[in-house]
Amino acid sequence: MKIIISESQLKDKISNLINSMGFLETSRMFGGIKTFKRIIDSNPELKSLFGNYFYGIADVDLLTKERTRISYPFEIIDFGLDEEFLTLYIDIEVDFDNLTSEETVEYKKWFHVVAEDLAFGVNVEFNTPEFTSLMIDEINGENAMEYYQTGDYVLNDYKIYDIYMKTK
Image 1: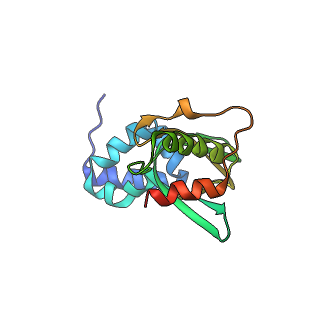
Image 2: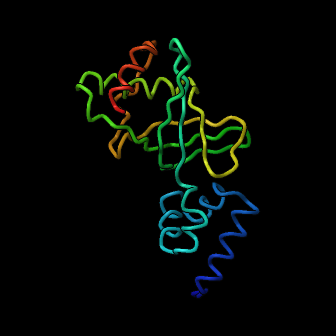
C-alpha cells in the first residue's frame, strides 16, 4: 500500500520527529544522513528549517604566543551514536591554494591528530551528547583517510599557525 502525503504534512511530520526524537535519530529513521539530506533539500520549507543541521564548524585553539582559535566549516557525512558518545564523520573544508604540497600533506595529517585527540570544538545546530568527536573522512570532498597517522605524530602549533596563515 502506498501512502501519499502532502508537502505540508511531510514538513509537519519531519518537524515533529526532529523535535521529539532529535535530528540524528530522525535521520537514522529515514535511512541515514545522505538520504535524509536529499529529502530535506528537495523541500524548500524543510530546507529553510533544517538545512543547516547537516553542517557545522570545528574549531581548535593553537597554543602559540597568544592563543589562536581557528575554525573550519564541515558537512556531516555520517554518524555513530550511543547513549553517551557521538562521532560525526565529516567532510571538512580547507583552503590549500597557497600551500606547498609538503605543507598540504602536513596540514592534512594534523587534522587527523587533532580529531583523534578530541581537540576540536564541535558547533552544530542540534543537541549533541556531552562527548562528541569528529572523524575526518574527507577533506574538500576527497578521501582523507590516507593521511591518518598511527603512533606518535607531532606537529608544532607554531608550524600549523604558519601554514594556517598562508591560507588566509
